[in-house]
Length: 115
Length: 115
Image 1 (cartoon, chains in turn yellow, orange):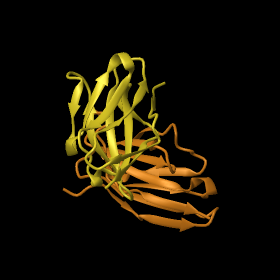
Image 2 (cartoon, chains in turn cyan, red; image 1 turned 45 degrees about the horizontal axis):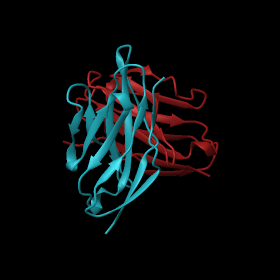
Image 3 (cartoon, chains in turn red, orange; image 1 turned 180 degrees about the horizontal axis):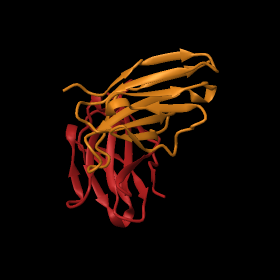
Image 4 (cartoon, each protein chain N blue to C red; image 1 turned 120 degrees about the vertical axis):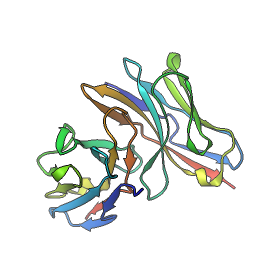
């Protein structure tokens, strides 16, 4: 069965600093990979997705992620963090089970931004 | 375009009482999901609908939980009777169809507190 781990429960960065959130997955085949962001009291919003092709994926709000098959990783990055980026970030892996998809979410990483 | 609408946003009930949550997906979205999100964790799928058919309800505790999606649009998730451990956020999400796994649009959720 597929699974997702996010090693960092909580990360604090200064505004303007770079950010990298880690995500590792376990799945026997090539997965579909996603990053979602959840602001307090809000639902999840899709930041970016990887299905195939270029392993460096660009998303919204200046985020990017890189798929590394050899490391089973899909880390999220941003070169300069803004205070509004403070939120919970979820990595997710998707599969095609029979004729429909199944998405498994990681436990999340909480990001705090220091002014 | 309106997003996924959920109501109520908050609900406090005593244990053993029934409770229902309502979800209106994005217009035209055939696939609807109900997720359970415990504090500090990622969403966990309860049930998925393709139009009015429940195609994955393997994680739905059927002794107390039920769901319906009449006419393939709105959906209701019910718990009867509620237990203390049901306190969580219940998220509804929708997607256009199953060909793009993981591209889901989430509502703000219903935060349930069982006392």
